[in-house]
Image (cartoon, rainbow, N blue to C red; front, side):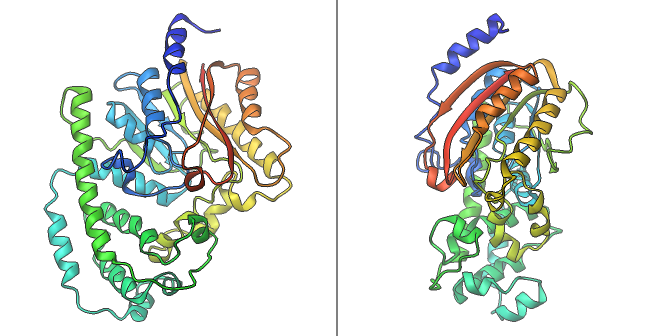
Length: 390
């Protein structure tokens, strides 16, 4: 059963071209969401519009698969309280770095930081890697001169520094472009080493990245002031590492809006996509964590891949219904990869489950074209935007 207000919103949503084919770095050069690459990330306009239509100022907006934090940034931009978690600790660091950047009020530290790096004496790369726990695979991915520059930057990223996360994520964000493997990111995920090592200017890229983060932070604050008619006040929200299958600590009827894009079956290895970062910062055991990834690409050939995926998703969706307030909304962006021949249409199956078993009201079910599909969504056949009301 839909209500009159739902019908008004639906008419507005049906007039939206959800493809957003014009969204890329060329047209949005200072979007804070672009400070670090992440596989299958949200086009920011999708959560932005959903938050605008289905929540109000100071509402609690949750993304239980927050990845690099696009939903959280868009919620913050519209003056909502945001809660985000993800099983990938590196993704959580990216999300937190974005918030740290927009909360940063003074940026003179960049110049001082870069000056120290540029004045660093020569580094013996093998000794430095050995002394600092850096995986020797770095010698297979990077030209020696590039690696030395990277190690000088690494040496000056101090865990005790208040700007540690901004520096670390800035460093992490240039590792792919400094790498000699120029093919699709899945080559790095799958540990396909480059055949030739090519020199890249790491320090130059790092300096540009820090400047970009500073500028995008200022742009966010300007946008916030335009939207909300007041200046940005520091907001750290709630961002943490958590498995979406373990939401028992979240109270019933406590969330005003859920906006999320669950992992697509057989499409991405999110932990392994952070392989290069893990070589330099072996803070987490990604081989252990990745076993718990839902629908991971490396599991796609298993006979029970679909069965496990649907079981996990149903348990999660059941919990999402439990924690969303009555009369409020759950928005999902779902997709399905090719992999082995699928016996189940995952998106249709999830949609049926939400309506028939969870007894939620379907407000929107629309397909969208996926731009840049080779980069963001390898092997995805379709993507669906699904919105339900409790």
